[in-house]
Image (cartoon, rainbow, N blue to C red):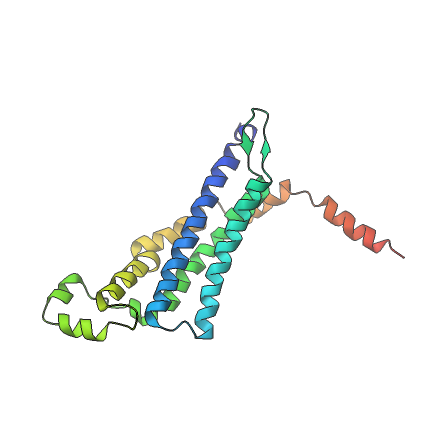
Length: 199
């Protein structure tokens, strides 16, 4: 029944749309962290940020492809193309844990022992304001950002999100087998056969 109504494809479109939003959010956090710390010229940092941008753009491209190749079903409802959605869903299972790890790597020691509002309002407030500010952010702005990064990638909530994304969309190996079962590889094999038959 699910396949007949396109329910899986429509929920898949919603899930991949959510995944785009998550990629945007994590890339935004990581980019602001790097700008705040002023280490954006370091090649390793650029490589990590580039990986986040790749995840975002791949997910967006697959979502767009599902829409561009959509078709009208027997009830007159627009049905996104299933294959790009399946690919996007399966890739995100691997992407998201790495995205959380990238936040941890970019934040490094700046994610540790973040002061509280009480600390800023206490006797060490002036010291925190003096030593935690950067060229682009006040100490309080920096701490707010890095607390958000902590919540996203290090806290119990962040760990739950990683676990959720690992299993919410199913086991990646089973998903790959399901994708293979609906993917028409015959035209690809025929191209190779034609190439092999050339003189």
